[in-house]
Image (cartoon, rainbow, N blue to C red):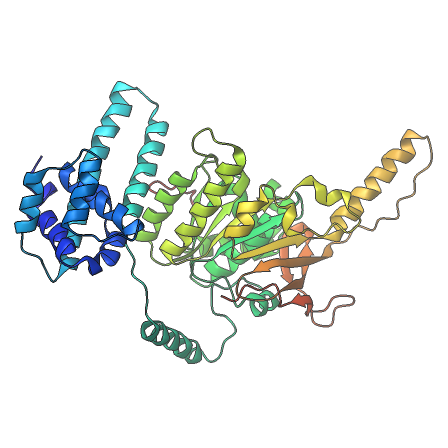
Length: 481
């Protein structure tokens, strides 16, 4: 083992300082772990100190010795070396050095693990990458320490935030623009570190909804990372072209356009060639792979302000745990990643079929598949709801039943090019819940703000409930744009 992987003198000095000044062990016990020490005897002494701390017993020479003898781990020579070491005043510098060398040892162990699973066990490359990503993440998480913030520090930071908001001209938008004015008022945008869940039953338009947000951001020069697990990148691009040009999606798919539409499409292509949109449509992705890809992409392109996952339940789990446990790990991983990268992560989610058995089919938090952990980890949960989807489905069922009975069927359903839609905010950690009305343009798969004086549609919040607010990619498979 090379000398730069451990420093026994530093380890002895830290342990000696604890013995001679036990009061500082409270701080050191949160900054250090047993395996941060290289020498096994040092590990045993530190572990004995931890046990004494838990029992509220004195952390001195006699009690440490008694604990080690009881565990048959006492080494008199090592104890003498620690007692003869000079106690230190600047323990932080010594702790940082010991932890740095501990991290290097863990990384060296990881290289051995890579060789074992690659050569000896002959695992597929994809499984090796999964193992490495998880272990590397665990190592980096374990190496991070954080101290309490005192009241003056929090007061200063909070006042700086308030001044920054004031400098913006009292704008309602604090986080990332949702693309919809009324939704911005309700949420103040998607905040840094937020995990945002957008859930709906199939055909409600959750992908179309988030693409409207994506389009608004990239048209304003913002960067977006989009993980499309369900849809090829080219199909996403078709939808974005339809949103931008007002050319029906079906016409774009078959190339059936007049000269003006072709000109409009070419202009959209020119705009998208300058857009900061990065799409990964690999189709199968686990939380470790996503974490690695997004970290690298964010480092390469700091202008990225938001990441989107379409959709959460398609993500692969790690290991062979129960699916609920896997989803819990995924949702928690996404929340921690959002905080680490200081950006919102938006994950689309499916709803259970149970919503369709109710008279009022507007979704609730309990309708989210594997909802427990998702509901807990999310900062904002929104549902996309269009009543016309169910009206059309019911009409088709009546038609089918009439034909089965040999009866004549006269349809009363009127196909609309524009339908009323609702964005239902079921949870918002730092704001109210309620409904926002939008308009869905079916042929364009586009959501727009509802006109203020449109018949039957008002740009107001409905049923706002403030009582439930909790006030408190290494390789990107990017299509040519």
